[in-house]
Every structure is written in C-alpha cells, then in structure tokens.
Length: 107
Image 1 (cartoon, rainbow, N blue to C red):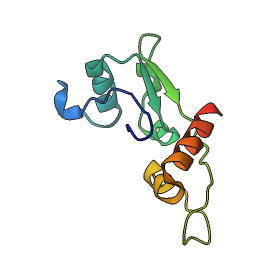
Image 2 (tube, rainbow, N blue to C red):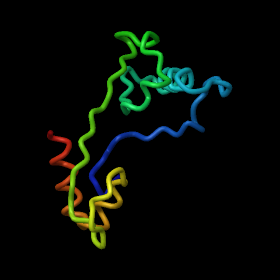
Image 3 (cartoon, rainbow, N blue to C red):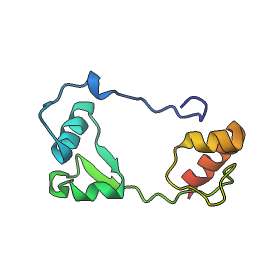
Image 4 (cartoon, rainbow, N blue to C red):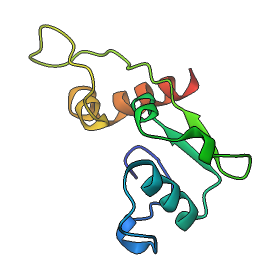
C-alpha cells in the first residue's frame, strides 16, 4: 500500500468484536458496525446476498462500478482481466502502475 501511496487505515477482522456466527450479508453489517464505518463500498456481485433494506443514511451502501484499465501484460497475447494491482506493478513498474491507478481513480 505504501508503494502506491495509499494511506487508508486497515482493520483486520480478527481485531473486531462481532457475532462470529454471522454469515453473508449479516456478517457484512456486523463488520460495518464493529468498524464504526458509515459507508460500505461493495462490488456488484454482492447484490446476490446483501439485503439493501438493512442499510440507511447512517450506514450507506454504495456499489463500485469498476472499469478495468487495460495495459500491456508481458507474455500475454490477450489481456487478462481481474488481476490485482500487483500485476500492473510487475508489468509497468512502480511509476507506471501508480500513474495507471491514479488515472483510473480520476475516472
């Protein structure tokens, strides 16, 4: 994270107090409450198990609409989607990956 100049606080689930029997959407709600967050940013795939009615103005749900940036991947004839930022780092170097991520964040 420091290589990409990301200064977001990370809280591990193992550091939180929540109902460990919770699953799926209820687990998400419990973790949001335990962290003190007021917004949950989710991928679109979570719509399958999140109960949107459990969110409100004090605990908002927002969906990320991610458009995967395309860049040259060494040794690949076709671009492989869905890889982590480490793929960009290894293919573009730190300067190129930072530039790519900052461009993507601006869009």
